[in-house]
Amino acid sequence: MSEHTGGILSVDGLRVDIAGSRILQGVGFTVPATGVTALMGRNGAGKTTTVRAVLGLLPDEGRVTGGTVTFDGDDITREPTHLTVRRGIGYAPEDRGIFGQLTVAENLTLAERAGGTHHYGLVHELFPELRERRAQRAGTLSGGQQQMVAIARTLLNDNRLIIVDEPTKGLAPRVVQEVTEVLRRAAGRVPMLLVEQNLAVIRELADTAVVLEAGKVVHTGPAADLLADRDLTTTLLGVGRAAHLRTEQGARQDIPQNTTTEGSGR
Ligand SMILES: Nc1ncnc2c1ncn2[C@@H]1O[C@H](COP(=O)(O)OP(=O)(O)OP(=O)(O)O)[C@@H](O)[C@H]1O
Image 1 (cartoon, rainbow, N blue to C red):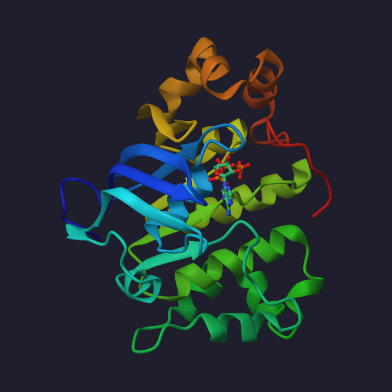
Image 2: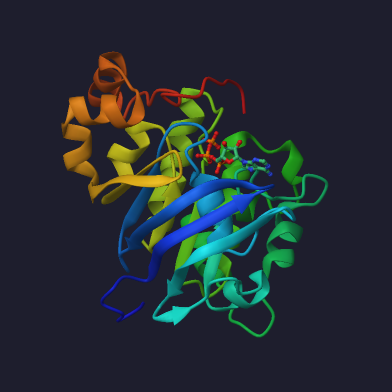
């Protein structure tokens, strides 16, 4: 765990252009070295672009045109992805990034980072289901189980931060609940930057909230304070009273679908 007082990850004045358009307009926030930091914002606000810029994974037509990204005190702006990842950053992308034709065990083996320790004991302690299903093809797992594989892949290596992009997007409420539990187990072991729009998930997991709007940070603070302020969540996230009520009443039993993204199934 980092001793760096400024947080494990700092993004400062980050500007990103994609295909000639300015997508990030000077994004700045710090991810504390403990707990879950939620990166929130409406569709198209720039959440995925932010995490992809941090990881050096912008599309070919995208580039960082200003600002800095610092990990554990080191400047990693524009660093090649393989070097950034080796510093100890795990990433579960929005599409989960798992290989459907391969087994659970093969998916984990492929995630092993060369030269490091591989924490199979931890993965199987947190997710015993994956040991039971090690011979099953990942593509035949449920959505919740697939997300478990994606998170397990990040915990397998010596990571000091894991970044998880919209793990509940498009999932049915019951599966959202399963994925929330998976994330909770992971968050007990390593700090997490969680891109998420579902307020019930944020309420369950997040310590800190960072809200993006049109490529800028428009709010940073304790997640509980943001969720307690209905006017603010309505203004920043466009969520109405109904979402709040569902979140408050059903956070444990029946977490609602994404507040701004409808979806169903896996
Ligand atoms: N490859 C690309 N080419 C052109 N524009 C892009 C590209 N990738 C992202 N953008 C634009 O950048 C903006 C931010 O997109 P981004 O995916 O970062 O938002 P987001 O907050 O993650 O949204 P969502 O919740 O819908 O995933 C959007 O307007 C999007 O259209």
